[in-house]
Amino acid sequence: MIVVTGATGNVGRPLTQALAEAGEQVTAVSRHAVAMPEGVRHVAADLAEPTSLTPALDGAKALFLLLSGDLHAPEAGPADIIGLAAASGVRRVVLLSSQGVATRPLGPSRVAMRAVEDALRESGLNWVVLRPGGFASNALAWAESVRTRGTAAAPFGDVGVPVVDPADIAEVAAACLLDDRHTGGVYELTGPEVITPRQQTEAIAAALGSPVRFHELTRDEAKATMTKFVPAELADDTLDIIAAPNPAELRISPDVEQVLGLAPRPFSDWVARNIAAFR
Image (cartoon, rainbow, N blue to C red; front, side, top):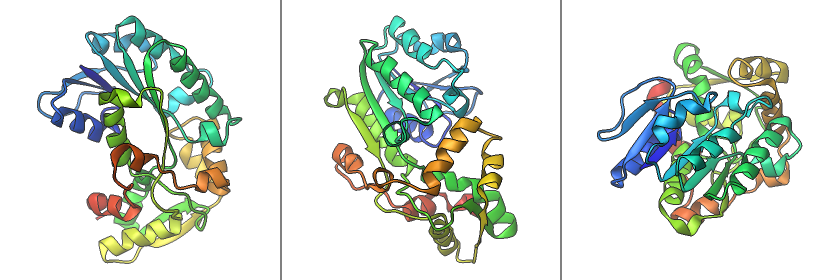
């Protein structure tokens, strides 16, 4: 059995589906009960309370560990989940980390994430670390304003990074959960092109067939919005990257293609699959 945390999210949902379609027994973990693919068991748990995960881990051979924003805070203890997994008999953990662990190692949220990576390496378990950059699905934050006002708002409108499609992350994660050849791998996951928020807005407008106006936020405005959902340290670390990405953050990684044998999906592909959210 394979346990997927964050199973209702942009990565966890397609990962759960992919594993179920591969014939695996899957336990999907989220805070609240939701509909799952046929044959998938659901367990409600809050990773902020690691022991709540115990029923999900019973009989599990592998764990996909996705840490929500609050678990990136310095006072959180996500490494306890790794210890619990080992004690429960889990043999493999695929951790969704962050590109910033390597590219911005001194950022407070990156220091915390590095500690989780280190705990996994020292656990004695088989492990794989995935380090994605920015997610294409972050554009869903614009869905309501695009639907109701025909606008999208973001900071640093003409600064781009190679955002990655969560479907690619999910497919890489599935491969790493199912194939021993990836044990000990650290994979940086990006899209195939550098794309700015303004260009993302244009891609959404093209798919809609109607104009969408781009509004550029100040850094303070963007941070005020982000801290409704994530700790201030994570918001600042993220804004530092998207304000002035360094060469490592602009690099198009070969790792998606190395694992899957297919080039990563462009942002326009993500938009085409998700355009209903913007209508």
